[in-house]
Image 1 (spheres, helix red, strand yellow):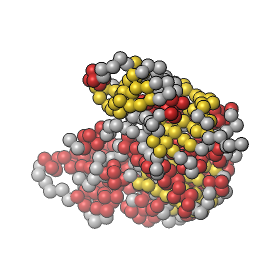
Image 2: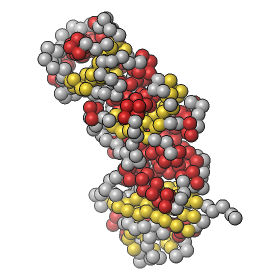
Image 3: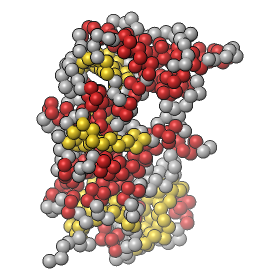
Image 4: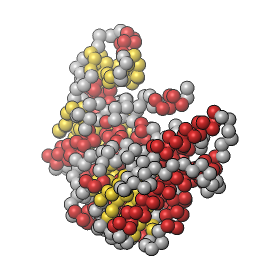
Length: 201
Length: 334
Ligand SMILES: [Zn+2]
């Protein structure tokens, strides 16, 4: 019998924590829950529960997929840390994916505008086109004024600010990027820190 | 017993393997000090970004240098606070992954208990002992009657001593971190200003450095206004003499009152040469120990050592819900 391919998906870049166990391209179980700034406390117990239910150990995993933002919501680093560590300890491939793309996959609309609020009228946004088999970028992840970005889009679209990812659609797409050196993976902040901005003034 | 220590509470990413509390098999430290220097202090968001860059690499180096594999580890000890919350959480979650991956017990450790146990690595401990904890965030006298028992006798009522050093260094234009720079200049100057020695005669074991700090800053300001030439060496020496006079006086008082067998100095300011000299010159009846330089600054070896003794004392570990805390009381540490 062919050994099944076990993949773990982790995204903590927004208020929602998403964990998913995918076996041979099918999501067998997932965890999608709003967190009160406590992804750091709950991620590992939730992950343990999810895996235990299916008699899977971290060591049994074949691949890890991690949402890397964009954004600097403190949660993003929790998921990236956990994803990096699992891939490093078990010496398995690590893939990164945009958290906006994950969010967009929730929608059923042809055109989707996923959005993570960044205050003062700005947001992290992207624009994607999808069928129920596939999903692709029209505009990559940006941080900009919400109205300016919306005005640029001439298609009918749905705005998505949360929603459980449709991971099978993502797995079919070209949106996953394999990390060549696990140690190098960092979140996609899309903006320098305030301290850096002030320093270069 | 092999303990894997993890420390990410401020601007050092550190992982270490320590056997039986004092045999250091590896102690990897990825320091961010060069990065924060240009900002005149540690920038929390930048610190978090640097920790996540280095985290898996530091683990890899530490386990390889110890010549072990993760299966050999018996306990994971990780700093749970106090410190920068975003930074703490990276070390804590990385440690939790190892715990779940290999089914190794994990224990959260107070950062200051680590600084105290940095002394155990080289010198061992004899009880009761008195620990003078001096760093950028702490100034306190702690009585230990046995392993992993901490009774705070007194602490700073305002600024930590390291904080005062950084502030004085800044007005003297010495950059960040300020302690080593002031210490170096102080050695070349003399105490000509006779700055106040706050609380030196008070009945308790508390400290206060904000008044001294303001006094020093005002003096500097007034001299600048009057166009007087400021001798930076004498200025540094005068500040350092005032600070160390107070620290040493209170330490002696506590030592005598509690009849301790040993005095240890812990934390980043334990590296200060003026403090080392003065405390050794004034306490000669019992041993006075300082950590070796590598264990004065933040490192994971000290966390592994503290975790080892905490685990031995309580015989239980934490679970995967372990959290990080920006503030955390040493006395409630158990
Ligand atoms: Zn420290």
